[in-house]
Image 1 (cartoon, helix red, strand yellow):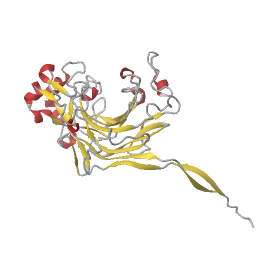
Image 2: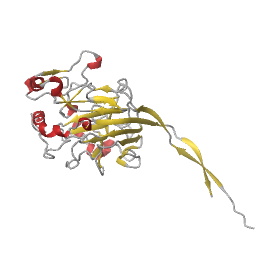
Image 3: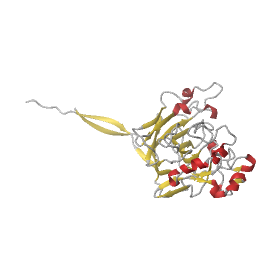
Image 4: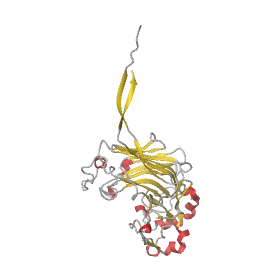
Length: 358
């Protein structure tokens, strides 16, 4: 009689676990969590919006956060827009201007020859309430539809430990454009993920860590998940599911200084740091809806762009063409909508017993 021998092999394996450390389902707009940025600065790109704290531009409805553009003219009147002084310095901590660069706290249309920022919108951040180093992020969002809208979900360093931007890094999980899908640089069926890094603003090597994703249809009709996985070995962004990766950046094989091949006239801001630097510090969340700008995000000569980045009157050119682009903004369809944001931290690996039958 033949006997079968059953052998049990017990193997110790490491199983990574996660703990939820941030969760906002936007049943309300919690201003203890989200600080409004209040500025005319245009995000450093001479964008055309004025970031405000107003429930016409940032509000929740049915458990969804809306960041929605409106016309400044409707709020301050035509004369103030075209010739007036716009002073937003504020008089208390709650309404103080948050960024003075690029004339961000006061603009005078008559003196500059340009209309004051013609669009009002919103930019929210968790810099004073929440930041984290390494983990997984998922944002369930529906993108806006409308020409020259620029929605973004991204992260900035809590402390610029390696120097001013971009030396301390920037993580863009999702950036898109509200233009139609036939727009040559990608419309509302496309988004990109990007890392910004370099020893100086003019040495930003973001093209080396940038990836576009084109969906089979518009991203404006349904909610999708925009995710980030980030640890000391690398990071990747993903769409809807972690297996559907968009941008992948490996930290193990080389440092960002090696990756960037910078001129010898610059010093390495990450000297003595692991390869992950500058992406090895705490970052906070940023949500915003920008409009236009002169940084090249909307390239010249594409899609009937009504302004030139080289013009001293680019904002006037944009505003004078409102008869064309304003009709593409359809109420709440032009808003960036956020259904939820969740962040998990990685716990220490735990040992589990795996039983194998041989």
